[in-house]
Length: 408
Image (cartoon, rainbow, N blue to C red):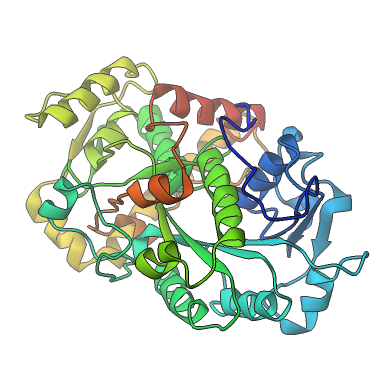
């Protein structure tokens, strides 16, 4: 497990009384980001109290051993924070005081009103900082000019391309109108890390299947499609910095008036579809720009991971997929789920873990996720400790699966 100790993070900006640490409430505390955020706070001893709220019991949350203290039963409250009748159970502390920081780590779910429900309660209770974790998929797919200039800034045009992103954008707009709410919004790139269950995990599972079948792994659209990433531990660092910042600034301050309350959180890698999936394959030769060529060379260093050929579908097939995305996704899942089950069975894995090759159709859309993170660096002082997704990070993810007996 990578060390979660804070690296050059200055926590002196907090406006709590001297020597008093903030009390922290994490909604979605047993989710992927929530558990890492709790571990980050616990290891760095940043809080006087941590409460994790989730609908799922710790025993059913696929927690790795290193989370046992940070996500212990004593810190846990089982509740549906999206139902207003449970809000007293969620927010009330035994000492009668309020939480200082509240983090909503639920990025998608069945209740799109959850951020607004939490926001109203935080405003009523005068919480010092409410951190809403959103997604960079709210932006309109950027032009080549925008990509060349560093990606979408926080003021870029919005056009969400997945339902959860639409819900998050609506929530963002509503939260900014709530009087008395001290809110900050983090728009995240694709989050990855050990025990990953997101887009990276699906790519790894698919590669394992293609490896077992000794077939070429082909991907839709062009090799330049951006899929920016950020490591989960860096998300935790950014979330804490954002809470400290929001607790100290006022709505009338220039930083808020000029730039708003939203921040893009992304690493510094120029990750594109070609490079991302070449991590899973042996080197291939394409005519690339200088920056892409450097990443192709990086891909050659890790060709030993799966040793499979990769390629890209023809423009005609990619066009067909754009027009028939539901059908394409359905056929892909039908073709991949049985072989994955066979691999698990052959490895003696009787209880399948949370990783799967099953693909949501939204993840196959021809949309660039290309974010500009310069404002977070300038205002929050946030800089990712993992500059880009590389061999070490990919291997660490696979090793974490092996430790949990999820990997065939």
